[in-house]
Image 1 (cartoon, helix red, strand yellow):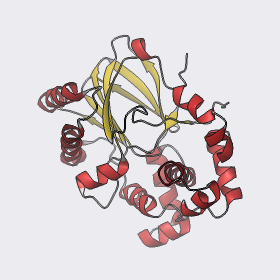
Image 2: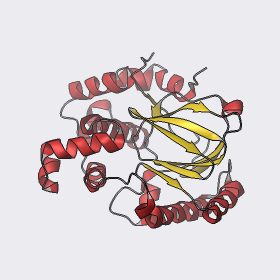
Image 3: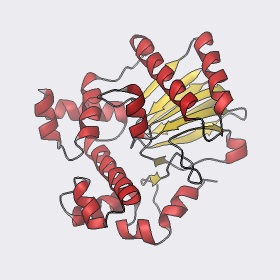
Length: 276
């Protein structure tokens, strides 16, 4: 169903409950490993114990107890290696709910890795532990999300490899206008297209074109799921130039056609997939 270069679409929020926010607890000994995947929900991982190696785009990141990692919508990621005692909390949120909470005009979660102080780490552990694996806890999830976002801004000057301003603005622009091309984006940012492309690839581990394609795919999936649009109408609304372009994008990113994704059971197989 997939090749080594194709990431799967695996939604973060539990499918059995209509929740806009959720906190999972994760240990590879209990759950196995998700294959490389991406989803529309921004996600945060708080490493409670142990150590882990994550693949993020074409880069790898080492993390250990006390680290906080962030993945924006559409950012592919996978757990590549872990110590036997790895335990983490994964926090994810519907992007619309996140925007409402933060009242932000940009993406609330950007690629990040923060080493938390013992005080901040223990405070987040307590808050995550109180709501993990529970539905109907949107308010405390929202408060946790807002607090983490505040920590991100507070810690930003201390991050060893902070996100470049061009990448940050590119992420915000694509979230608002997924049909925006690199030339239009660079003109709006008053920068060279080559410089925007280089910084984006360096920070995200994938090209701007590939990321924009994923955002449009995720928007199409959301439009079909929430509004019941036909594939043709959803492709147009998701800023694909044509249905044939949409078809090529699905094939390149997910290894299947849009129709097969929604109608053949492939989507469910992706959602439930675990690597050995």
